Image (cartoon, rainbow, N blue to C red; front, side, top):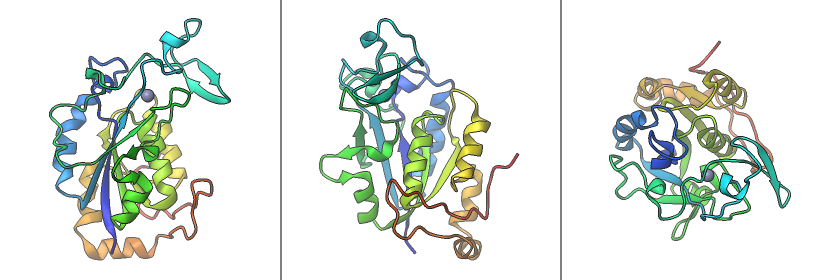
Length: 238
Ligand SMILES: [Zn+2]
């Protein structure tokens, strides 16, 4: 059986209360994430890492307001307050997170692009997230972090192209309509669970093998050809 990875998405101070792009109660996920870290074979964290003149920032779009959409060099970007500028306090991970020895994959260095997905992050020694997870023989990824509607959602969608992907609801916090986001993820074949459900998936091997039997796996997936998994145990319904 392959390994399970915990993917912590952008748990940075700018996304926590008091930060420049704060998610309400964003800091409440920190103790839970700390408790999850030791349960996984592989743990990784992504970070938003922008130059100070990033083209999505309000400071570069004086005629626009937050959440307006601008098109820069053919790419659409949502206008945001300046956040996670490289080397600033806001770009730091929450100080209570136990991230020693957890590799960091940064994204958003190009000022003309604002990727939300942590999956496109890069580590100078380890390469891409995809390479790292495959090198580690991971076949299941569990995502947590901030914010649920944007970066965690997009990370889950990208991970689900290559790996069976679980979205741990209580390991994230949302800016907008949580129910809408979760329904969309379930439709894409992502397993939406609470951390309390992890025992079922991680400890009960009999249930787990049954669960694998009922699941389909992508054969030749790429980022552009998403293959949906069957979703036998959906933790979220109407
Ligand atoms: Zn950003």
